[in-house]
Amino acid sequence: MNKTSTISTTFFFESAYNKTFLTNERKNILLKIVNSIASEYSKTGIVNLTFICTHNSRRSQLGQVWSFFAASYFNLNINAFSGGTEVTSFYRNTIKTLQKVGFNFHLTDFSHQNPKYQISFNGYKKSILGFSKLYSNSINIEPFMAITTCNNADKNCPYIPTASHRFHLPFVDPKHADKTNKQEETYLQTSKQIASEIYFIFSEVKKIVS
Image (cartoon, rainbow, N blue to C red; front, side, top):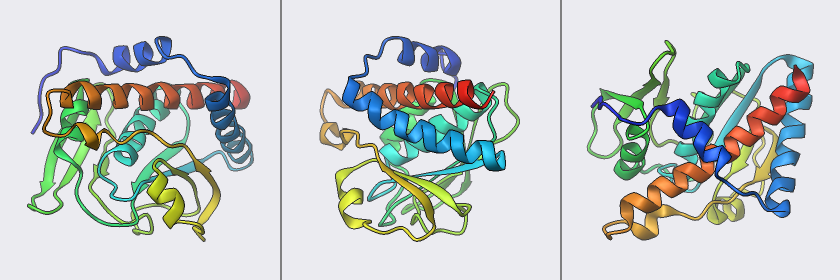
């Protein structure tokens, strides 16, 4: 399932950040996340982040993959995970939009319902396992900081006992564009927004802990 991309992952990541405008309201949310991560990192030297959305198929997966990349880019000891309140699958359009910017997907466990992929990028030996799962799945190392990415998850997860902190960082679900002529553009834009905000979080954490 590996595909060659004409766009460098690093170029996309940097470009997304440089071309994104953050409102003061959004920046304040991000800075709360930054400060909590930096505080925990300063104490323990490691932070686990788990991105949570209802189906763990689109936004939470993008959050995990871009955080996985950001940890390498900024040389921070931050682990990225994702989960949902329901199990579905790592949606195909989400995979495609990540492949277009250089992420490699290697199918390790085929299932029509919920296949598993080893996800990597060029120049980095480590990979992460991508598939839809509950946020409480044993693969998600505890304790973790929870970042919910959709309104349903925010409403359905009022209490996450294994989360040391919980933040709500909603993104518009690209699902609304499925099977339309705006599908590719919409998923790419969602990926750009998430990449840019992950860049902001990790860059600010790096400034504080360095």
